[in-house]
Length: 290
View (cartoon, rainbow, N blue to C red):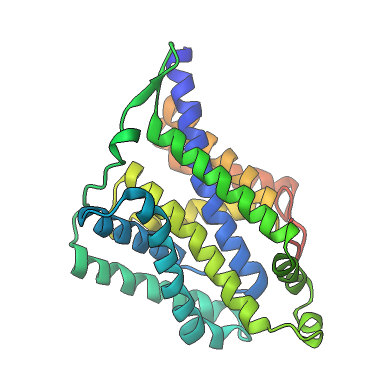
């Protein structure tokens, strides 16, 4: 039994880490600006394709892991300033429609540039093997993924709680007008906050490309579980997104083991059960990061 259960638990943790970090990026953007960013998955895909292009041309995977998300951040900030920012004071419905249309456009652009079929993006040779624990083998790349995502989450938590700019971001969520009255450039806060969410999505996109493959729709496949992660964990809660992501990852992985046909449905069942008990999610507190 342990030979079947242990791999699924580990795969569930890896999936949960993906959902958590993408969900955190979504939550950051939604809490401060009220923007429902349906193009979040497209930025994941963009970072993955950029890393693929860099590695294909001889660039180190380790350089691409950082450079590709940063380039995606630059694109994201341009999008924020030109398309998203004019919609901040309007109903969230408008930003939802605009970013949804943007995601459809991005998919077609990726097809034109990199083709409609999936492209191979393998992990570096040093991470291609597996580590044997006796009763099972863990792929080194998946262990690496968990380590990187955990480091990214810890770094974000320290940034939000230990730096002056991070504290201003948290304060702006609670009262943007007061922060602006104190002389803080709120437009800069919006841009940095949006870019931070895109950077987290970009890291997840590069890592996901090495594990799940890379196609024009690969990022959007992780988007809906990320939204469910935010709902289960609770809007505004960094810790809630982590817990929600891990719960969804475990639910999908274990359901795949016992009832494969219900694997995708399991996260929605879990969401319904949580909302019946906690309508704001497990750790949701209106307007607070965590």
